[in-house]
Length: 205
Image 1 (cartoon, rainbow, N blue to C red):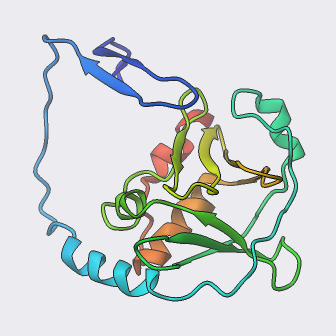
Image 2: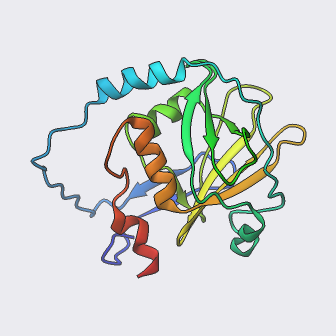
């Protein structure tokens, strides 16, 4: 659906992907060329390579929040909420991970989330939206055999991160969309927000 409420295409998605979308042949796309200079993608990519080269020294922390499902919004209340957080990344481009620090976690505890390099580039360099709606969450899985599956879902003013995989690696946390978007903006080295505020607040209007 476009913002004015007209159907412009259809899509398909399930819990493991892949997802695809198709626009109707009659759909017209309009674009406006802004006066602002295009983002410095080359500079962002160079900074991303520098950041991801750092070693990860923190052992992964398990915050709990089991049995929380993206399509069961009331269950989100069982996940710990991160009111503040900072993102770093490391591990090298062959096996990168996000490292999440928050005052709401125990002292020195860090959430370590494996992420494919291509997905890290999409979020860190291309500045794509770091979530999807809870009906079809944003998901990824590192190529590593023992890596967990990761999904990010947004419903109203909460983003849910669920992580599950081999062994006892299941956990979930929530955060506000602006908190999550601003953390990505800081990781890119930007002062401004990475997501338009009207997009963050749209579901509350």
